[in-house]
Length: 359
Image 1 (cartoon, rainbow, N blue to C red):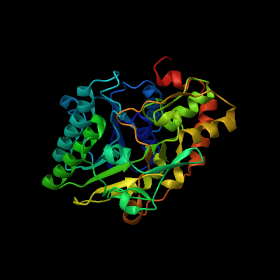
Image 2: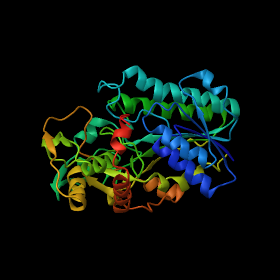
Image 3: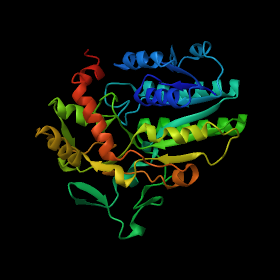
């Protein structure tokens, strides 16, 4: 098996590559990364040491594909993953589309040329914001909980188990979400038209040790690292309560499913599935703060009451389809993930500075 992983020096790409090197030593793994994220060079060194071929290149640039070897599968883990991308002043709207959509197009052309399968690691943020923003929630134990007493009040595709694939992806979904929705549609069309398998995996918040810490992405890792280092933290929106809820998933729980997908040979029209930690692996920022306080002591968190355009109170993906189709299981509970991140934060006190390019 020959695999190309894009964004291989990022958290998810490097985690998958190292896992497969250990568990499938006969696989040939090549990765490409533009290395623009601070800290990427550290992951590159670990990958090369493990026997992974890492190439410096940009998937937005067609000529960078000329040096890539032919492979059986492409796993696309490269993206600008922030819902605020293109509107927060740190990246432009054009950059978001070039990274997430143009990059996908280049990869699909590569797959067409080499008859390679394609796996897109997508996101929960493809789902339509208005319905999610208006979900009926109640406050309990310092977190929002979905009110399910009247199922008719919930949008189609949302139940007590979470947001399923049946829920709408209609705009608005943010520029980031739109880039991923468009990438999904493009990938499916390419696979069906040119006869190669495509899988779309919509993931909840991926988290674990070694994830680069930023407030707009990787919130679980960022919150723990910032708390440990007594860096400023803020609850934004929803009255400044910190009650907004997300689910948490370790990428290693996704790895066995990807191995199954890599064994398929024919395209399927029904190729989209959610992967998440589910309700059991969900918590609010306020609950995350309580966990940090118990481990490291108190730390002040400020509040900003005004809501932002893309904020939603409760987002938990329903992974029932993946459980049935792929026998997907969450082996790493929330507490284990938090403990893993916490130990890393204690061993790497400068990680936030590395993530920001200050070291």
